[in-house]
Image (cartoon, rainbow, N blue to C red; front, side, top):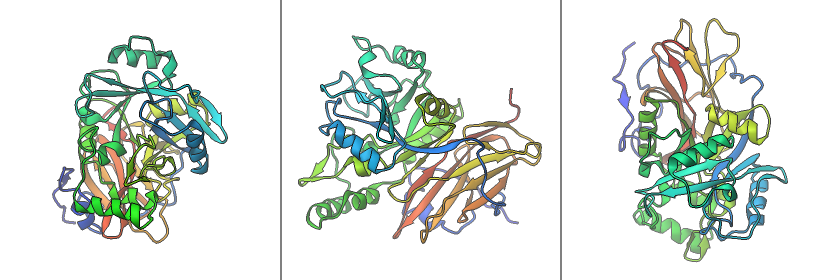
Length: 398
């Protein structure tokens, strides 16, 4: 079989109108993906859907009430919401930290260091760390990371294109941020051409919903993913998609970013044994999670696993496995009815293979950091739908 030159993921080549759209149905190189025998299993883990990087009324720039957030999370059937309120808290509203209805809220905070613009700041999410427990004056970034870890929480680099302190012992990073996508200049709104203006007018005058308009605006986060791939060559670091939800943006008098839409744009699915703060944070720390743009289509049930010839049970994303004969990567996509999608397998940031099948398997020939992207067709565009966390195939596993 003739092999084609592998293609490096790049800024321009993977725009929806570029490579991802043009290569639908085209084999990109490496061994062809073949249908797997049924879905991969993830043992005792359950797929919990939630949202990470969410602001409540405690943040100075979120006018929505706590009750609005609780209602939206419950109506979206979210299992969890990880809050990241700005410091210091600016409201007398109570800190959500526990179950509210069927949704588990986990308190956290967002710190901005060294600058006012998101383009120039170290923005750090402390997940599982109550904002009222942060000492005053605010700690350094390294101290904040240590505080999060000592409290059993996690430190995540937010708005990573402006993040500077990559030597810090952070656990994860945002690989997509809705605010970064909609507000490319940082804190200032920037129109992205006549197409954006038309969609804003449609929202105002044609009574289109945010659920219709927001998905039309999202794009593949090329720069975020390139940065993640570079970091993955240095160390383990999990990736999440974040809505940076505030419910504070209006265009021509219409609410553009209601919680009901942004909490699912994107969602994060965590593979954990139970729905508790400790279980979710432990699973996330291990990279047992994937990002799904569930406002487009529900991604629940996606699986990315590795199975070796010597093991009877596959291991989930986030795992480290030793290179061995017969090692295989399996992907299961919860195919939405009537929608075309493309599955992309990458190694070290390079697209190796593509498939339009819901169940695929691929033999592993070389060590590397493997991850999966799934694009979903919407009209003439291919939109980001699912981003896995990596499976690390090592020459040897200690």
